[in-house]
Image (cartoon, rainbow, N blue to C red):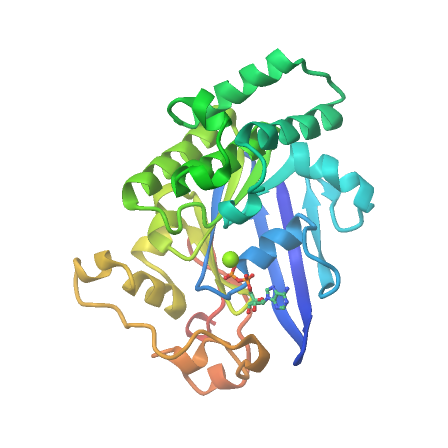
Length: 325
Ligand SMILES: Nc1ncnc2c1ncn2[C@@H]1O[C@H](COP(=O)(O)OP(=O)(O)O)[C@@H](O)[C@H]1O
Ligand SMILES: [Mg+2]
């Protein structure tokens, strides 16, 4: 059984210009122990998908139009709001993209991590002394390779570097020992050295702590470095699912090809792949048929009139493209 099972999830937002469909029939699975990537250009609905699964969207303006989310077999979307803190604490948790925004600027790191420990104590119905809390905080910061954790605890978020803030945010999530952790663009904006350290930490948390992970990123290289499987999203839809290795070496979807072409590696082996043409999709004004058709170098007539369904590929993935239907 999957740890997380999302079926046909559709979400829209009320805007000044009317309702915008941001997620359109998204199905998505995470198995125990897996690291799953969600990859797509900015605006493809990745963050909304994470927030929708965790019931963190503001309703309104957001609205669930349909679909289901099951975590460990439990129906998440039908839960009473009062039950959700338990789910988020010890079940699923999310590290947000902007750690400078998600951390409270007026509190020291220590009191923010302490808040997470409070949540842990409430959901597990345990009590921890001040000393025990202090020990846990130091241990977790050490696990996350933060030097001089004592000093880090005394600092305010703005006194930390981007990579340190990201690790403090991760610490606040994993101190609650979730089974599944969503990381939204955890390496975006960090230099490549810090980026690699964060990826190493994610791998370690997965292997040593057994936390399953969902890595949300616009960067296919980042995803391919640590993910077992990748979901490629376009205009609020899943357009391809596959093992990381397959998507990196032999992508099926023309859009996955273009994501790959944007990587330097694409130019090393063999002829360059087609470069993405045109603009990212405007969700308020999507074309008929396949939503990628205006930018697709392979577009046929059918692509402009009918939307392809997601069908299984020869190597246990899925693809929605008329080239393969
Ligand atoms: N609160 C909101 N109100 C209206 N539209 C929103 C809101 N949040 C996100 N969107 C729209 O949803 C789309 C997907 O956004 P998002 O999930 O943040 O994409 P990604 O994380 O892939 O960059 C964007 O077009 C964005 O404008
Ligand atoms: Mg996002």
